[in-house]
Structures are given as structure tokens and as C-alpha cells.
Amino acid sequence: MNLDQLRSKVSETDTCYQCDHPFRPGDTRYVVSMTIVADFDGVLTEPDEDIEGGIDRLLEQLSHADPDQVERDVFEQINVMLCTACKERLASEIREKRYRLSLPVGGHSHYYH
Ligand SMILES: [Zn+2]
Image (cartoon, rainbow, N blue to C red; front, side, top):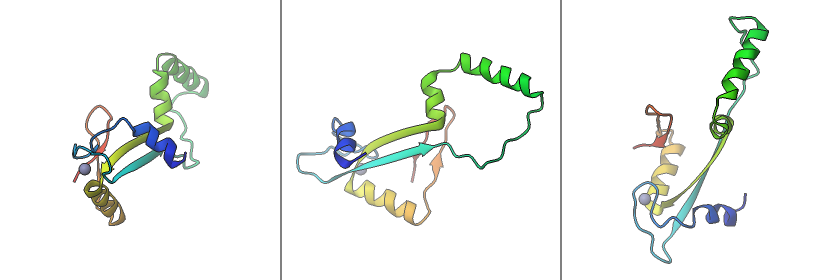
């Protein structure tokens, strides 16, 4: 995805995602694009039950699952717009490994300081 495509996804944003600073025409702003992909370490754990029972249980769970949530469990692309100060803080915290993810009940995550 190129910069124009990323920009179009957040072009309707008129404030900084992090601090709500309003953007004015000509202000410097940054697109932060996050790709979240499920990883696999190559290890398959053995189910407590027989394999056929495990497959049946999995298919039963999938038949009731929200397709959008199933997709997000594997891959999700999130794009946000940040002001200069928030971009600097985020990049600095990531470079210095001081960032943490907050994972409140409900599964949504965000950066905190
Ligand atoms: Zn900001």
C-alpha cells in the first residue's frame, strides 16, 4: 500500500488520533499504518480430545463466529493520523522499547504513555 492509499484511508480525519489536536490546512501530520498478523511458531499442540472431536468442535465454533472477527484474529490493518508531537513520542517510545500495549477487557488495544 502506497502513501496515497494510506492517506486516503484517513483523509477524513481532522484531528490527531492520540491527542485530538485539530489539523489545519498545511499542518504537518503523519499516517501511522499498523499491520497486525497472527504468527505461528510451527508447533501444533495436541488436543485433549480425539482429533475428529476437535475438528467438530472447531467447525461448530466457526459456524457461530463473526466472519469479520475471524478475519481480525488473523490479519488487521489499522491506519491513524498523528500530529508531530504524538508521532515523535510514539516513534521514540518504540525505538527505546518503552512502549506498552494496554489490553482492557473487550480486546481493543491502544498505546498509552
Ligand atoms: Zn497528537
